[in-house]
Amino acid sequence: MSSIQTDSRMATLWTKGLCAGYGGEMVVHNIDLEMVAGEITVLVGPNGSGKSTLAKCLAGVIPVLKGEILHNGNNISALRSDLRVRRGVGYVPQVKDVFNTLTVEQNLVVSAYTLDKAMYRQRRAFVGETFPQLEGLAKCLAVNLSGGERKMLAVARVLMLAPSVVILDEPTAGLSPRLAEDFLAHEVRRIADNGAAVLLIEQRAKDALMVGDVGCVMAGGSIRLRAPAREILSSESAMEVMLGAAVDELIDDQVDES
Image (tube, rainbow, N blue to C red):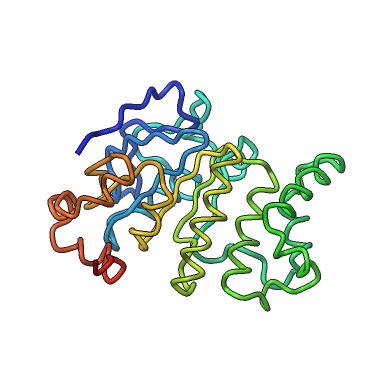
C-alpha cells in the first residue's frame, strides 16, 4: 500500500510530534498529521484509540502536552479554543453540538457573533444554500429537531464563520445507516468541495473512507497508517496488520457480502 507525501508548507493545518491527554497523562502521542484545503482526511480506529482526544486538542479544548499545531503556517498550539475559531478552525463535537433551548435561527446568529451585518448576511445565505432543509425550520427549537437535522445545524453553526479547517467528531452518531451515508456523501463532501480542509472522525469506516481523500488508521494513541482512503478501504489485510482483531469493530457489518 502506498503512502502519501504531503508538503506541510501547503497544508492548511498540520501537526508535528503532537502529544495530548488529560491531567498531564498522554493519550495520543507523536501525531504527524496534514490536512489540505479541499480534502477530507478520514480518521478511523477502534474505541479508545485516541481519535476524540486528538480532535479536542486540535480544537483547543484540551492543551498540547508536547509538539505543535500549525494553521496556515502559524503556530496555534497555545491558543485558546475561541481564538482558534477566530483563526478559522471549526469544531463539531460528538455531543453538545447545538443550543437546545434556542431556535435554529438563533443558533446561527449566536454562532456568528463576531461578524458584521454584511458578512452575516453573506454567510447566512451560504449556509441556507448548503443546508436548504434547515430553512423551513428556522423558528423550530433545536431540541425538537431530528438527529439528521440537528447534525446539519451543528455543522451550519461552524460554517457561519467560514472556517478553513473543519473537525467533525462522529457526525453520524445516532443516525440511521441511510441518513449517515447521505450525510457523509453529501454534506461532508460539500464542505470540502467549498475549500475547507476536513478532518472526519468516524466509526462507520466504510462509508467514511468512500467519501474521503486520505485515510488515517489510529491505534494505541498513534497514527499507524496514512494512505489514500480508497486503498485503505480495499485492503482488509492492511487493517488487520494495523489493528488486529479491531478490524471487525471498524468495518463490522458494513462490508459488502459480494
